[in-house]
Length: 431
Ligand code: S3P
Image 1 (cartoon, rainbow, N blue to C red):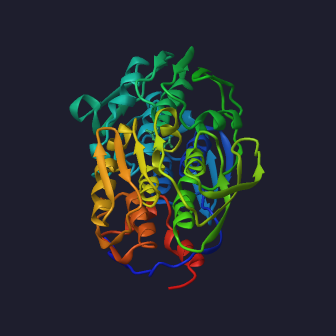
Image 2 (image 1 turned 90 degrees about the vertical axis):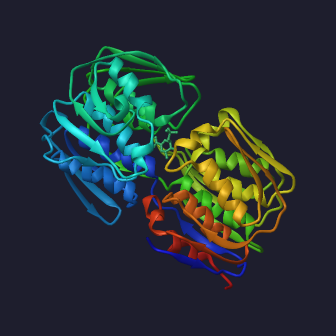
């Protein structure tokens, strides 16, 4: 646990950053590269702890994975030749690793056990295991499979038709990964549009998938061909500097290499609707994941309501959007976001309690929060709850508070953004 005192004296921010690799795409690149027979190469890989947990799991399955800087080379003999690991597969703090691995391992020939840290031990897994069991998966864990550790006995699977009870890309992806080894065509009906990195990467690795208006069909038994994956920058990481640029005085920040997949870009919609001075340029309609540059300057903002289908498109950005809303004129209402309660921590409770400590006018609701903006914030000692996004929210808040902020644990930020403070340092102008 690394305590940190953040004493910035309301700086202005200027400069350019290249945003590090997308966490969701980095995980999937390792997973698909490990399933495809042959040599997959990845550039722009995120060296965050979550993605390193994914690499660690596949190495334990006998896949050769070399990392050099942000380049990764994966040499796999294909899933049929994976080795049965002699130890548990440690998924660390990563919900994506845990849930997607369940889908992959359910149809393998191996006996495996997945376990993660204390936060993973509290996160619901039945949402993934229920549909996998319908496909024939044999998975056991605490409370009938709700919680880790989870033991998986690989089993032949059958396709299912499944209507998702939650809008979750992790659940959708776990079913699709299992569907790859299932007999027949699996069809998933989404509750709301969620990030579609798995669908895009299936195509990139040569598989055919039909995805239209929230209905996804995938025929089992297709072989994957190895590929080269260029990971775009993570818009969820860029979000912290977008908010920083909008809130800090006399600032202009240019962020390059930002992933612009429309199923992730809700933060841009929110900034635009709140009246931010934001511009998207140099858009590269990359074959699989679009990317571009975002420029943001100090902005006058107004409160808005954020709800419904927009929520899954910005689910991870809500902590930093809440901070943004504390500085907008008028009220911001966030609803339909009950999923936040089952993230790395209960993010509704954590955001409300920590922003209150800074003097914000914010109340929790069952499925979101209500923020009355326009209150100046002051320093305080904040808890991160071991959650990277709560930690970064606190660090960005320190740029606008009267007085310093202490973070109880800044180490957790390395889960998704190991160079966060170095990047912040490069755009800090006056101290
Ligand atoms: C992710 C999906 C989201 C997101 C998480 C990463 C993914 O979770 O919160 O950080 O890579 O599929 P849910 O799909 O469960 O909402």
